[in-house]
Image (cartoon, rainbow, N blue to C red; front, side):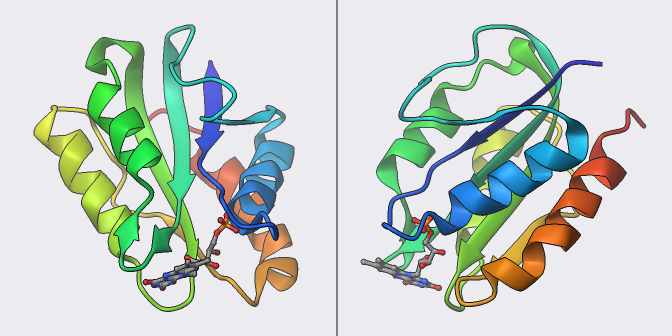
Amino acid sequence: MKIAIRYCSKTKFGNTRRIAEAIGDGVGVNAVSIADEPELQEKVDILFLGGAPYANIMAPELREYANKLNPSMVSKVVLFTTSNWSRRTVLALKKILRDKNIMVCEDYFYAHMLKIDEKLEEARTFGKKMAVID
Ligand SMILES: Cc1cc2nc3c(=O)[nH]c(=O)nc-3n(C[C@H](O)[C@H](O)[C@H](O)COP(=O)(O)O)c2cc1C
């Protein structure tokens, strides 16, 4: 099974990157920033995709990534997010992807921005749990 992990992380703390890397540890795959790889290079069964809200909206580069994602390149997307309080990034991503007929798991991973350290183990476990074909 082919798995990819892509994330958009913008603060110096790298909260979303750290969660992406923990999910990567769980599934044995390197997490890659969408800044380093703006498009998927190969077809995947599962794409873990994560980001955060900034001033109430998701980063425009993440929106663009989701908008450009080719439905034929991915069988299923699993979302993750970090934030202060708002989870609207995942809701917005779900809508963009589902409107493109990309399957998105209802379940997603959330870590509060001040609780990243204590969420890393849970993120590893989440990765393992979600890395299955239903
Ligand atoms: C400029 C700025 C604006 C933010 N706006 C929001 C917001 O509207 N809602 C929210 O829940 N979190 C907000 N946050 C918190 C970030 O979503 C949170 O710190 C997140 O973990 C950042 O992820 P990153 O470190 O991977 O970039 C904001 C953070 C920054 C720096």
